[in-house]
Length: 153
Length: 85
Image (cartoon, rainbow over all chains, first blue to last red):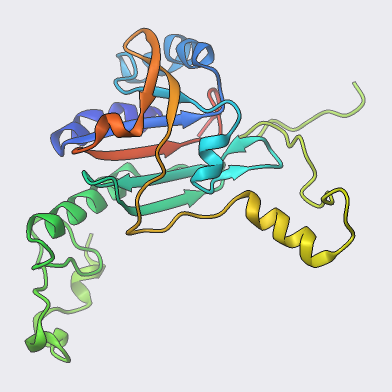
């Protein structure tokens, strides 16, 4: 969570509200912020830290681990209409890639702004070529887009 | 100490996933009950609404998903405070 907190300004710039959730109490959230996270990021955690102590919200989202009694690393991108656009779930030992989350949000935002008039091919980043779906594109993606564009970082 | 528990990235398990659902020995029911305990949500569908206690800006309060209607939200679950990753 420290990385997400550190990059909160990047989320804010895209108009994204971050919410973190675990089964810890709000008291533990405070102490974690005070004793560790604030020292890692040089400020207090800039978003609400939610407490789902009985795991009920985690169950709603399908990421509650009944055996361990904790929530797995589930990250959900929710659009302004409250629709889930994407999610990623990882087991606890592997951390998320915040850059990838931001990239996906930028892609979903572009699709939303163009009302689906533009879509983002694999590996798309802001500034890279999008595709405009339509009858003309059927069977012709190879003329418009090449796989090496997805290979580049 | 009877058994030392290795410190990992989450709290040690409190249940055994192989544990049986009480009251039946039907394998199909066992599986169905386990399945129904947790169903994955779907992309393109509404995010389930919730309201939870939260620590925010040095205060304790309540936060609902609907508070952020009209905004993009990145909802991040994680295994627990003071875990390492």
